[in-house]
Length: 197
Image (cartoon, rainbow, N blue to C red; front, side, top):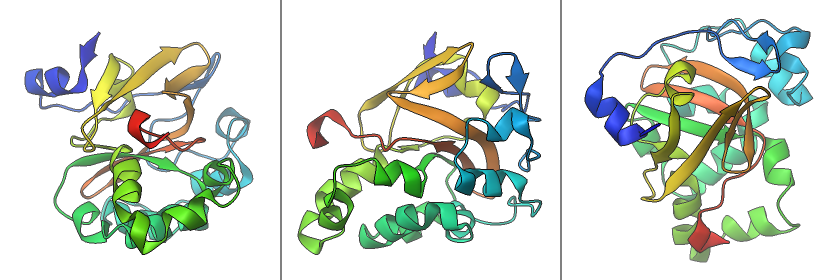
C-alpha cells in the first residue's frame, strides 16, 4: 500500500469506478448515486437524501455543496467558526471527509458547542483540517491506500474491506461527490486527531 502523498506523486490521473459500500453491493460511483437499498442501507436518513439528490455538484465548491445540504449544517457552522470558508472554497484540489450532523451528534454532549467558541478556534481548525486531504482522491484511489496525510499534518489510517472503507474509526457511507475544487466522501463519525482527544 502507498501513502496518498506517494500515490499522487506517481500519477496525476483520478479514476471514477464503482465503490463497495456493503458486502457484495456497490454504488454507481457517480456524483449522484441513486437512492436505493444498495446505498442507503448504510446511510442515515439525512445522507440518504443527499444520495438521492440529482443536482450536479461539479460546478460548485466544496463549501457550496456542503452548505446546500442540511445533512452538513453542523460541519458548515464549524467551517465558518474556524474561518476556513475561503480556504475550502479555493482552487484546491481537496478531498474532504465530511461528517454528517449525526456524526457530530455522537460526540459527548456539549462538545460541538464548546468547539464553536472563539477561544477554541485553534482546536477546531486542527480537527477540521484533519478531515481534509490536499489532493483529489476519488474512491478508486482511496481503496489503494492504507494511509493519507491530512492538511492538519497527521496521517489518517485507511482500511478497505468487504464491508466498505473505514478512515480511522469512521465508516465511509457515500463517496465521490465531485465538486469544482475537489471531492467529498461522507463519513459517519467525526475524526479526532490524536492531539485533540
